[in-house]
Image 1: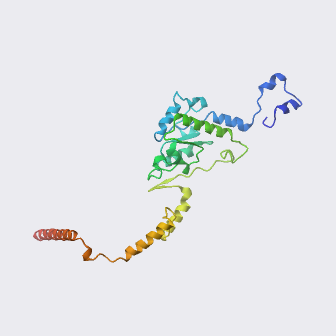
Image 2 (image 1 turned 180 degrees about the vertical axis):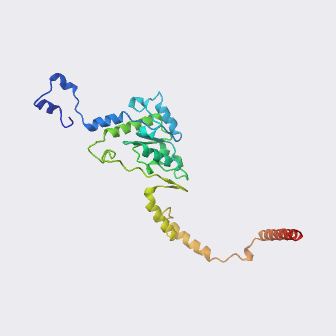
Image 3 (image 1 turned 120 degrees about the horizontal axis):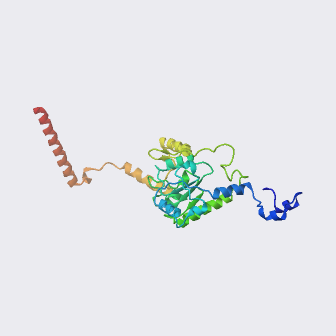
Length: 277
């Protein structure tokens, strides 16, 4: 009945009785499907850092997000459709996070909770921290804060529900998970001396080839002004002759002579012991 409206029902050959006209709701398949998803969103139960404490508070009795149909926090990714990334995402932890995301059935959503999950937070560009989980997973809603309050997380969950309400099954780009065949899993990051995204392997190989040929790879290059200033200084320093004896500190020279004499005496003692033996 999605293609009909109330006027069409009145103009049909078999009009509805007056007592039934107020008991029929005209809707669409997309609205029914979105209503069922928005009111049965089950988050996956895991936390990474201090944001997880705020997530626990949100699930407690004071804020009670069970009234939104989200009280069933599942410990298994097979039964969850919402991943709340609550805390600092390290390079070691992003690997199991992506694995858990791939194990979740579709439709599935990701909520980045806090500054660390959204962009690295105070640890941005640290040696062991990922600068945002969106570098590896598609994030639907960002909740700012360090850490966000339970009210902020509730607002983010309501924003995700509104996003679900606006999706349409008729538009395939709007709901990529609704179509023929399974979708491709997210590539697993490779953890070694550093984290590697398989989707960037072509860029990494290109940079490695440039570095092997002594060319700049375009990563953290110095500005042109700095290069112009540093190059003459390097050339001048390389052209300098080694320091002469006149420029040597006499105190350091005396210490060096004493050290060499002590080493010579030590070697002489060791040689004498070997001869005696």
